Image (tube, rainbow, N blue to C red):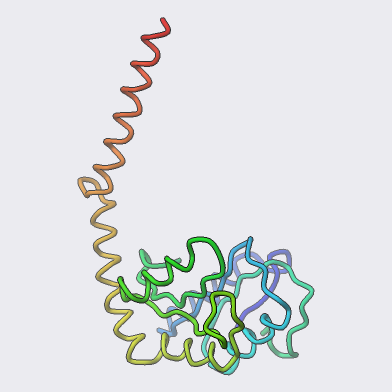
Length: 186
């Protein structure tokens, strides 16, 4: 486990740690909630406990916080072929989490105690979800599926791919419209 605030990090120490895990063929769980999500101190402690109890390597990126974590605790996505443990908090995240789990089948959603969108997640629930994703049969299936999806995404973004063509068309149309607008005012 590796935790430190950005200001305290030695340059590239976390990258060296990740490189070491890669060389050891040891998966690493990336945990981040973004800059807008507010998580209670109690929930943060439960997250810390769940991650510790799962006994998996993880990199937790969080805003600087005054939350006290237990002593000893301190020691992106589909295109990178990484399955997702979704914990939707707000806005479109609930729809995205549903799509990740039910439609794309490249990840799991975290279960809340009361089943509500903003309910509490226990350390035990988080631990089980982490272990299923990283070591379980569902996680194995997600890792295979996410490779397929990532390959399709790379193909779409490559020169000549569908996303490449769509972006090229958008740029062409934007430039044409700009020329039309410029000629009207000249």
